[in-house]
Length: 145
Figure (cartoon, rainbow, N blue to C red):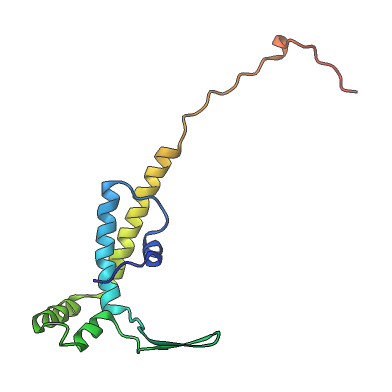
């Protein structure tokens, strides 16, 4: 499983404060689905070499492949049973359905968070100041010069 990149976390979940158990459960469901998308459908380039020539840095990258494809290509690093399990998991995933589920969970998370924030940020209504009527005025009105 790939380590979460905080830029991706904020891109998916936003910048709100998530501190309740309901929000934590939703976030865990979102991360499980996001991990499937990242590991099976989002190709990534790995840095092969980096050479410095004075101030110029030249980088060479491998071809973009998904972490799933990289794992399958290295049979000495992964067992045959694990390869079969990964292939079965890949065959079962519908990327469009997973993306729709992530969006639905994200909107539910946003609803929970904004409801919590609006309940916390609404101060009690202050008492309206009372105004003296004309007959109760303590100072006589004068005409401004």
